[in-house]
Length: 325
Image (tube, rainbow, N blue to C red; front, side):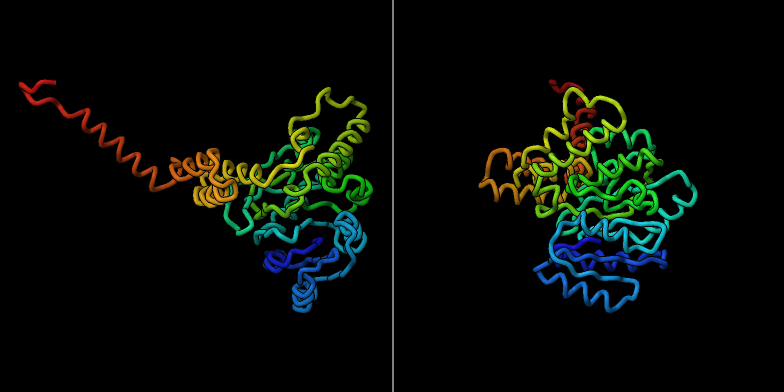
């Protein structure tokens, strides 16, 4: 678990590891030069559980500490965890069982429930199960095909491919998965085992241009190793990532995602913030209206069903004899 200025979330992330149904683990925490008080929280947590090994460092970027974690780890299985996410209690149990049952698998991920900074649900991240589909999506630059903070690896396989590459930092997950796909199989279990936090200070939201460039380097390297030419056109997702998404664009995406998943109150919260941030723009007001009148809202859905039944009953009422129609 690399940590950099995650004071708001890190205690809960650590607590979620301590609450796993599997108890034979060690948690390696690498503080990456935090300056917001995170270190005090980490030191308190480490003092309460001997299974937590804490390393306090200067700021070097989290790929440095992922590779250091590979060197320091004593277990044969190696799991990723971010400082702002929450692992559900049976995460380790189900992933360990899968790896024991599938010796050819080198990394297994899971579905995740995406939540906002306050923990409000925004929708389930559903991931493919089969190796071939996962690899194909990764070759398109779609790293969410195997959610990195929910991944568990065979440590010897990860070491054998050279660990993480610094030149691909910000897209190091796609790069390492594609190298692992050349020595074993990739998989996911179809269970939600992680609460995956989305917020404006996360890497994917705040450093899109750098992420796109790192992703391009990783994909070009993967195509060369496979001896196949890269696609004539970069994947649409990669083209979108080369430019920085504005705060309002990110919030619009969250609103639409929450509405599609039926999390109406989350959509309403972010739609209201969007109206405030955009000073009442027409597009923001339209999204707020959609959120308030969503068919998935229980009250709105009940009122609309009641109205349809009432109109249907009226249309079915037979006319009174002699009454003009």
